[in-house]
Image 1 (cartoon, rainbow, N blue to C red):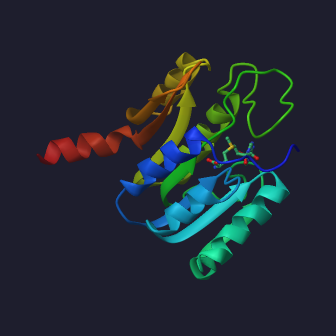
Image 2: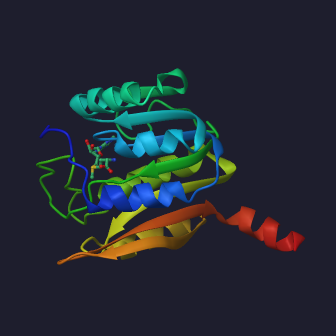
Length: 193
Ligand SMILES: C[S@@+](CC[C@H](N)C(=O)[O-])C[C@H]1O[C@@H](n2cnc3c(N)ncnc32)[C@H](O)[C@@H]1O
């Protein structure tokens, strides 16, 4: 492990997006790092679980939640993605700013997302869509430097619709926050109109 990820442009873009989301019952942040996004999520959810594979990041998240008096309705779990949660957990909002730079060796779990950059994100998406409530939403940070075609292919196989909510151009990449939702929900909603 290489230490706690320092809040950066991607962190702040995700916080801005979370601020625009409606209030939900159950939320989970995967890869909470410093805990800043989790603090923002406590304003938007009745109950929040934060997870990170890095123990120091879990302690950092706990510290921020304590500091903001948010421990009464939050839990922090050190684990790989969403592995402790059962299928059908019914999360209304699942959020992840993943490691997304392409690298085969995964030298630093906070920034390298595997050979194609999206490898961790693909595994995440597969788990997340099984734990999403019917009308739930997934927010995922993506970068133009990773192989996004793989991500859209997997999302389509999982029958997830996606739309970009916010983007920012940096000097070598564009980062965006993408919202994923189960397709059949959109059909039902549009059927009613
Ligand atoms: C880009 S950082 C984002 C941190 C924080 N959410 C933020 O926005 O500043 C990615 C985080 O994901 C965590 N991470 C990487 N692989 C993970 C996995 N398989 N399961 C859970 N967390 C993971 C890293 O330890 C790191 O804290």
